[in-house]
Length: 283
Image 1 (spheres, rainbow, N blue to C red):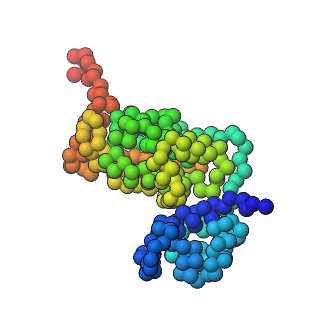
Image 2 (cartoon, one colour):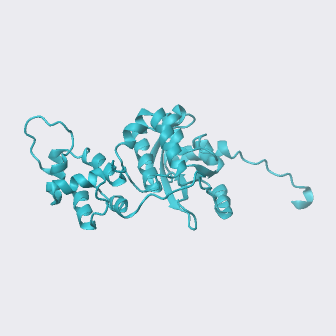
């Protein structure tokens, strides 16, 4: 009887293939059939038997101890082993075929609209749920109803915005994996991964790495068609009382050329209102 696919096994295999022997102090003698570590090398360095490690990768043992996983995580040079630990303790939820509806609190919608910087609310599947006009001035794809994964991997104009395109693409995939976690039966997850795997070679390449990272702030450089190169800091903040919704905002360092360019984008997005004409009695 075939073994059911294991998220833990897939993750271990993918990460093992990314660690080279020289990174862990193993001398290379002759030609190797694999670019990364062999299973028995991971087992040796983690202090476990090769047979036991093989069972983990094949999904025949899904309840390893925390100590074993932490040892393997050190060998695989993971900066954070929390995702690895979660794969052994959590199990995919069984979803019905109706995707969950994500709702932005009205107070958050008002807050985003009033922010003086580009801002939007990002859902668990990286859908744009709410966005202000400044966000659309930064990128026309930052509008309600768009999806960040689809735009970054499938929209040439969005791809052209990023100076460091592949790095941005890798970061958005890593954040998506962290956001969805082990909910691989989620219909929205299946839809997105299936569509992008078929349509984007870059997505397939990066998805196979199994990179995982928190959806967090970062410095981003854009090649904007109207104002040229602009350096911005991106903040991502969780919205309390919601299931994975995040407020995303871009801002520039005060007094910089990028701050002036952001001001110009703001004037395009929010034209100055005409002054009201007051009567002589009001003066």
